[in-house]
Length: 388
Image 1 (tube, rainbow, N blue to C red):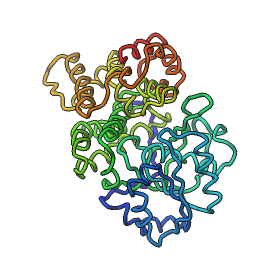
Image 2 (cartoon, one colour):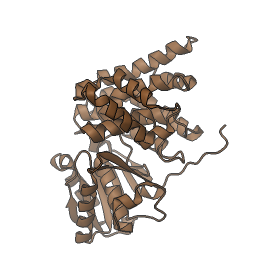
Image 3 (cartoon, rainbow, N blue to C red):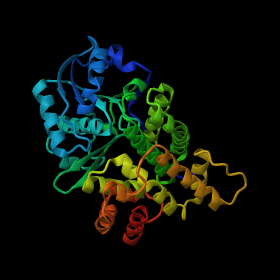
C-alpha cells in the first residue's frame, strides 16, 4: 500500500436510457429557476438540445442558449459564453455535448463566480468556493468531463492548452443517457472512446495511482476493449453505447480523483501539444500516441503493463512478461485500427519538420509531471518520430 492518497468526487451521477428527456424532477432539487443551455452546433443540428429542453419541463425556464462552441474551445469562447449568461439572468448552466462544450461551461462558471479573467485561475486549487451551478449531459463517451474537476481551454495567443483544476469545477449533476450518444458518427465514436482508454491506461501507470483509481481504471479498460468496436460500427446498439458512456465516466473519475490534479502522462502531454499547435482532435492524437507511450513506460512499470494487457483480454498464461506486454500494446493498436482511426502522425497532416517543436512543447505540458518515467527532450522527440 502507498502511504497516503486522496479520493473525492463532488458530482451527483445519474444513468438511464432516455433520462435526458425526463429531467424535471431531478433538476427541481437544485432549487434554480432560470437555465441557459450550452452546446456546440452539432448537438443543435442533431436535435439533442430540443430533447433536453423538453426534458426540463416546468422545472426551470430556459432563458437562453449559447451554441457558439467550437470543437477546440478557447478563452474568447468562454468569455462570450459568460457574457451571454449575465445578459440572460440565468442561475443555472445546462451543458450538452462533448468535452469542448462541457469544459466551456465549466470555465464559464469560473468567470461567473469569481470575475476577472481565466488567466487569473489557471493552475491547480486556486478556487476555494462553490461555483455557478451546472448540469452536464455528455453526448460523447470519451472525455469524462461530466465528472472531472478539470477544464481544458485553448489560449489563442500562445497556442497552448490552459488547465483549471479544482474540486469545485466538477458539475453538480451529470446525466448519462445512451440515447444522447446514438447520433455520434463512427469516427468520433472511435476517437472519443480511445480518449477514454488513454485516460484509463495512463492513470493506471501514473504516479498518482492508488487502489481506488486502479480498480476504476481496469474496469474502464475492460469495458472499452469489449464495447468500442460495437459502438463504432453499430451506432444504434444502445447496450454498447451505454457501456462506453459509463466506461468513459469511470475513466474520467479515475484520472481526476487521485489528489494530484490530472494523473495522465506522456501520451496526453503530446496530444495536448499536437492539438493546440495543429488542431488535431484530442482523442485521435491520444489514439496515435497511446501504444508508443505504453512502450516507453513499460521499462519502469512492467507489472502494470501486464495487468493492462489482461484487462484488454490478453491471455498471460505463464508466458514471459515481455510477450504479454507486447501483446497488450498490440491489442490497443488493433482496437484503434479496427475502429478506423489513423495510426501515424503523418496521417493527420503533421510534417516531420514539426516534430522538434512538438517535443519542446510536450515538455512544457503539465501532464508530463505524472508520467511514471522521467521524460527528456530526446525521449519526447524519439516518441514523436516513432509515431510519425
